[in-house]
Amino acid sequence: MRAKVNVGVIGAGRIGRVHAENLAYHIPDARLAAITDIDPKTAEQCAAEYDIAAVAKDYRAILDNPDIDAVLICSSTDTHSRIIEDASEAGKHIFCEKPIDYNLSRIDKALQKVERAGVKLQIGFQRRYDPNFVKVRTLFREGTLGKLYILRITSRDPEPPSISYIKVSGGLFLDMMIHDFDMARYLVGSEVEEIYTAAGAMVDPEIGRAGDVDTAVVTMKFKNGIIGTIDCCRKSGYGYDQRVELFGSGGMVRIENELQNRTSLTTGAGVQEEPPLFFFVERYREAFLLEIKEFSRCILDDEIPAVTGIDGRIPVVMGQAAKKSLEENRPVKLAELY
Image 1 (spheres, rainbow, N blue to C red):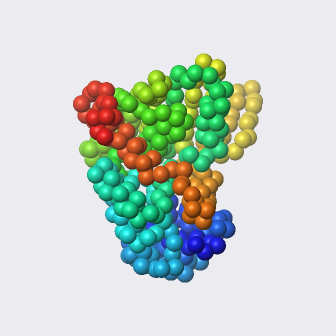
Image 2: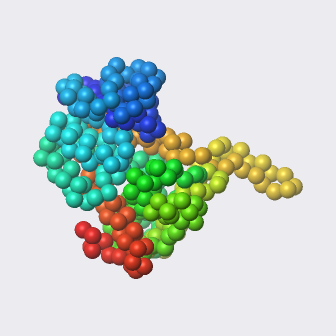
Image 3: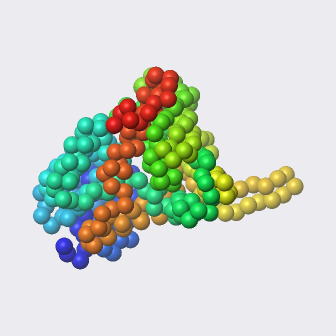
């Protein structure tokens, strides 16, 4: 392996551009060699901004390039598992945004091809690289909280996505709450065995007519006895709301929102602070950088990434269990779906 990892980015949309910027300017171990997008104009604009030499409409142009070592899959979710398979057959290391797929059989097929090819696969759960979440996990692992009782996660977007996106995204449980399912496993260090969901289309009836929900509370029972909740909504009205609390016999630790700035104005009328950062790109800017640094390092040092294909599969099972619980109005054991 050469001293730098040559990387091709597949998909020049919002998250593709985040990774392209980091590769172009902030990751010395990697070189951004190519970018593709089904919209050639979008790819060309991104290439011009970040000085990318190779541009194409078809992602296979990256896979056919022998000088490219790895790919970042940032295209629409319905293409992920297919591109993972194709990239594996081409011998490319793979970073893939979540989820791998909505269908467990297609996920399993893709993971089998990765294993047979012997390439590395890292899934884009960037919150694991956020220093706040890392600190909470460390405190629990060190025993500071004593015996853990309760996990609480709040996850609310500032605005719902377009209806066209919702129709192909896999729905709230697989395109939005999947990050929270992963974070629950990461923070607690145990697998969830049972899920119960209450949810509805409370923000926008059009979301309901599209077959999805926009507001949900999921209760989780972990194998180690901990109880967890996730409350999730597609619209907060005040910014990106991301909070976590772990409560145990020895104490409690929580993560509050990152604010637009830390100015606090106190007058006779009260205390006024800035609102939270508007969306995930701003909130997790450092985490997005750190996860791609990890991906590059694992390729160069021949190590297994911290977020593997199995870590990509299990939250999909959790999302399917949450949806099944809502549809059947009962607790669902994950064992029913495995």
